[in-house]
Image 1 (cartoon, rainbow, N blue to C red):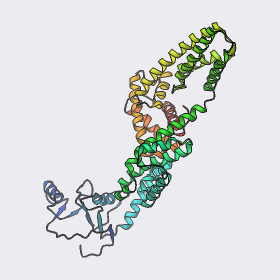
Image 2 (spheres, rainbow, N blue to C red):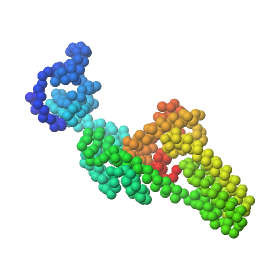
Image 3 (cartoon, rainbow, N blue to C red):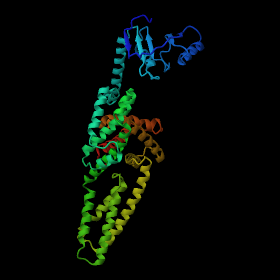
Image 4 (cartoon, helix red, strand yellow):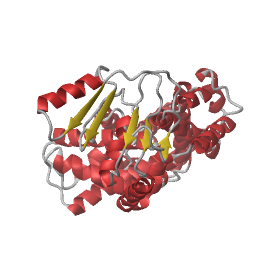
Length: 438
């Protein structure tokens, strides 16, 4: 067998001087099961140098020291791939496994690879492109590493505090989004490089440091998104700002007693507006009611014409709204804490409890949404680019929604309800990704 001319050799054989001292033969129909098991264990422990087998040990055989495999007959399809993976584990100084082919398996190997790839592509459909990252070549990885370096060229990536100070000066969302994107991609590349075994490529970037910088960048991007969302809110905020301006300039020719009331009214309106402005759930019926009541106080009246009695009445009304707003904020913070301070899931929780609740147990709903949050965030962490394709996110999340409600928590949920819940959570994630106000 050794004298034959091998037609195919995978990898580059390492030049190691060694002497074969022992060998054994394992056949499925000769000897007892215990005898065969003993030979396998002796090979794993290094007591046997060469093991000859026929129709044996193709699957379920795990011996890290097996680094060279001689194939003397054609093996097909699944069995071929299983056989080749017997030598794909790293062992001591060996980074590769070696296959010496005496049966000309190249054609069968190519056919099997193509069959599995076509099957994978058919199963994933449009999602295939999001799994293509695991097949990146070394050249593609090098290009993305260079892109990361180019984007971060003018920033101090060695000191997180200085980096944070530098990006804090960025006001343009698109510029901040570009920085955040390459830092998130660095996390994906780190996992990909480790998976590929090209560990020398890990020296090209300080991936641990970039993970820290990614958090800083994400925080500043979130701040820019929040600022833009507030600035684009042209309804209640502008109305209340105008009301404050009117109060400031209104009582210039009145008695001192009325000036004191005017200051009190202004201060009360200010703290009430701030209490409502910090609310993260503008769709909350309680919040909507309080906001409408606040608007009602000032919408139709010229504040420069407000009498002393009306000021006193408005102050009492504002104090009532303020107290209710503070209580709403207290409850909101308690609920948000249940989801690791994630506003998205606190809002989803309230929407699912307001109308036709899916369960009578609010604690049960919390368990479901906590599980859903964990699974969704894990998927996004593994593939940070998926949020660029909303249809892909919808298909991914609907499976997780059904699994969490029906399979893991035994809460009946029909297809229509599943789609409704899925639509709500997808909207939350997409709003957050695009910096849109909830």
